[in-house]
Image (cartoon, rainbow, N blue to C red; front, side, top):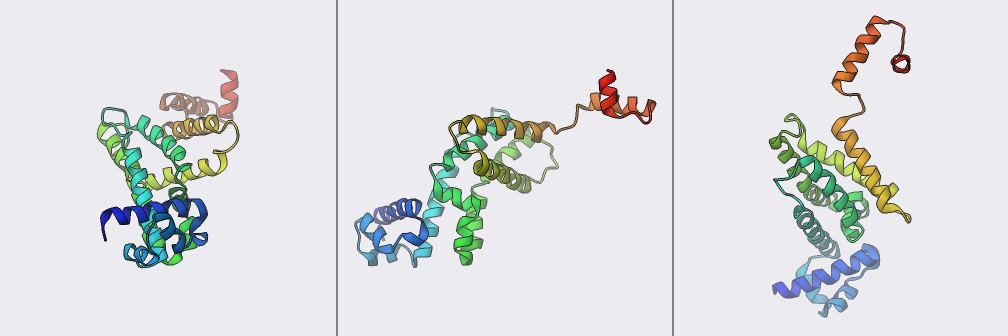
Length: 219
């Protein structure tokens, strides 16, 4: 099949699947929107499910390429990690096929395609993994980190932020505030600095039975 014709079919499929979902989009609609015969659509994909997978794959590649533009080895990796996470959340508003892939909705809808869809989901995390590895090389992040698991954890955090905070008139500020707090927690933890903690533990050892809160009040 000619590359241009297949691209036209995928563009139509992507637009319709994003607007109406997999179930409510028919191959007839895709053919009409693409300006081709229904049989021509089946030259681009064996089944409707295959066409849907190709459309999602196309969107994930576009999403990954867009976020990759923000990666600059001259910048600190921790700053880039926060910036790309926020940009990714905002990007998902415009790419419902990618959003539903990350949320796991496609895998529920098409369980027989779940493994291949999960591979696409992993493809969407490649930028995050690259930034973490860059951070290790910069000396910003620990060298013993499990990069893949940390990438999944950060994706989970982004999903929760998207679900619970990406709405309302002040959603941009809510997203920013939540991500600032989340990354501060991720980078610095909830403990005091080592010096402050050591000082407090020393005080506790000298005053058994006195709580850290009481010591703080006394100071």
